[in-house]
Image (tube, rainbow, N blue to C red; front, side, top):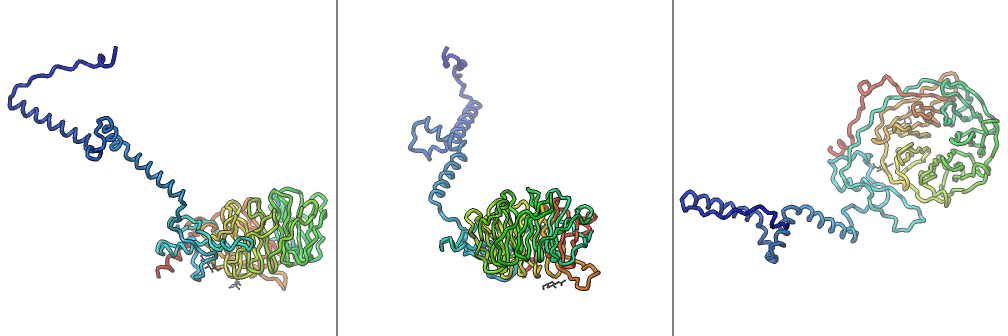
Length: 480
Ligand SMILES: *[C@@H]1O[C@H](CO)[C@@H](O)[C@H](O)[C@H]1NC(C)=O
Ligand SMILES: *[C@@H]1O[C@H](CO)[C@@H](O)[C@H](O)[C@H]1NC(C)=O
């Protein structure tokens, strides 16, 4: 049985009587046929080259049913070709360094009222290539998306309040750190003593002696039962927590050691000093792996992380350097600060870091040190900068002032001045070092009044009792 046989019988054509009614009917049928034909064949004129009816049907179908897909295919092809040619987009090519305008405008909250090109300039990438890169590296293309800048509304954070004061040191407290288990913390002071305290109760557990001048840095290893300490006596020591004795010395610094950092995954320690160097040490063999030279003045702060740049230093020469840990050389120098940069912090989760100088607090992106934004307003000698996972950034200064910032928006949500503890004639206000406990819910400060202070979030505070007093200032500035 073939297909033709399967078709239903075609009825014999019926002869219609030539009545007026039938004429009208035929007329209607004819018009309807014509309309259908026009509907389906209206592209005929567009395809005079296809007299063949099958091809015509195909073209009609393509045009009426697949025209979107056909257009998409063409567009994709066009884009591919454009990419192949690598045509430049309309992004501005910007010279390295921040714009020189002094408006103090914050990058993240440049508003829609500003003209496009102005915004483009503001979003410049503040990277200063090191001398080792070619001169052609003096310009970079803006890597930021071309969408309109967003006004970043600050996240609400509870205010922090003092809840405990620990006394015991007989000189300025210069450094604090909390051990990975969050049970005890360690402090180092100008009295040359290292003290270990219970985090929960604030009780003194132990005092360690060994340094012969002020202890400037103490850190607990996250992976070993060791404490590392460094001091103005140029010494760097490793203490064994089982015997509470010094088990290693790292010799090499020529003057007072200012800060130290422990690599999170490698058995490496980095210290920095007034001799303008940072030194990388093999924790176990005590060997100096690298002497990182390049700064022209005291290296005040050092940070170490497992992603690049693995070592970041900041100096009184007002620069920040990013180091290639393997090669032992500086790969980027950030020259945006105008004054000594005494404090650095890594954001615990975002691949960013912050730096503090009396001119500004600045935020940067890893790995290249791309400028993110200025946090303006803490115009004091900032010795310490810390950040928790909630995005609370705290800056602590020489004259006892502390400012609390929301990391993303750069909004300062609280300002406090430490209360000097009575009892000593030469007591003074000053924050030298800070850290968060492992949970990020307690802030611990090392102070000039010889105390350690502990702060926690005021849990009774709400967004209603402590509203965010935030206005997009930059928008206003630009409008008027
Ligand atoms: C950031 O602050 C510096 C001074 O520290 C200033 O020169 C620069 O213009 C500021 N950048 C922005 C984008 O506001
Ligand atoms: C802290 O120091 C800065 C800069 O010297 C000054 O502007 C500010 O008023 C000082 N604050 C206090 C509380 O002393």
